Image (cartoon, rainbow, N blue to C red; front, side):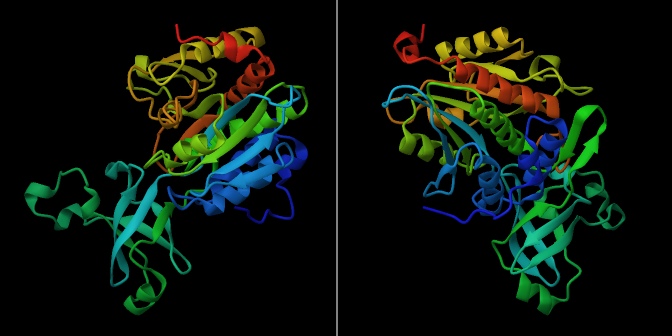
Amino acid sequence: MGFRLPTLLPSAIINGIMNDKALSEHVKDLLRAPGLSAFEASVREVVAAAWRPYAPQQTVSRLGSLHALQSGTGRSNRPKILLAAHMDMVGLMVTQVEGGFCRITEIGGLDARILPGQAVVIHGREDVPAAVVLPPAALLPPDRKNEIPRLRDLWLDTGLPETEAARLIRTGDTASFSQAPLDLAGGRIAGRSLDDRAGVAALTVCLEELAARPHRWDVIAAATVQEEETLGGAATSSFALHPDLAIAVDVTFGAAPGLPEHKTFPLGGGPTIGLGPNVHPGVHRWMIRAAAKAGIKYALEVMPAHSGTDAFAMQVTAEGIPTGVIGIPLRSMHTAVEIVALSDIKAAGHLLAEGIGALDDGFLSKLRWE
């Protein structure tokens, strides 16, 4: 399945992703594109353009995941590693249009507490700006005034007259946060969809670095679809591509006041390396060695059950794929103002490149679960 690539490449790609300013612009390009779970076509075009200079052989899966191949320098029957980061994001879907208002449900898991007052864009026949509203507390019965908002109590107010709303908006249309990317102090950036466009950007960093250094293995970067709902992109891509190793690159919980220290990780402290049943111990050890050799700061992330990432689907595809997980600390997950440190994105990409550069033709024969 093919697709049309933009004629001009983003300025971040022209200038080089390893440049901090260019990396910031690349991340912002990714954040500006919509692409809710199962509706990823718009962001896929942005990712394809970013990866094309480093991995020009690109295909799109039947579900819409993007695959980009960077060939290795080893023997003709080269082993291959799949790097997966999901490009879908959380958001809303219209369930009913009433006058100039829309009832809504969630896509991908949202906390209703953060929704009132949010500005959104409804992706109807045309993009329609709207605000998430709820009844004023003063007009509610006394026993409901202090209730936590529920999704069924919220509306999208479009400001449109009834006939115009009916013309532009249909049941099933999606709505995404309209928060623009925001630069924060200390090399931080805030915005919608950093879960997991930050991981996509880390793959861009990795591909750029590997393009400038020899590596024996074939590398397939995948921007997967539907991770927030079904893990369908990772499951189908890993089945179709049948890699010898797979790494899921996703976000993890960033440290903030009031959050448990043993479940969160500081922004700017480097990526996390997962350890748990979704992670092959041999792959985990390989990533630890790569981080140590390159002097990359990292934290160990314990994942005693489902990792909550594409690794869950990739690990059990076909006869099983040795899989690992790299995390990028992120604050305010599943909101319009998710926050990451650009240095962590760059470090995650560098860690991937270092590990892949160390893979030799005999790595698989020495890989053991024990």
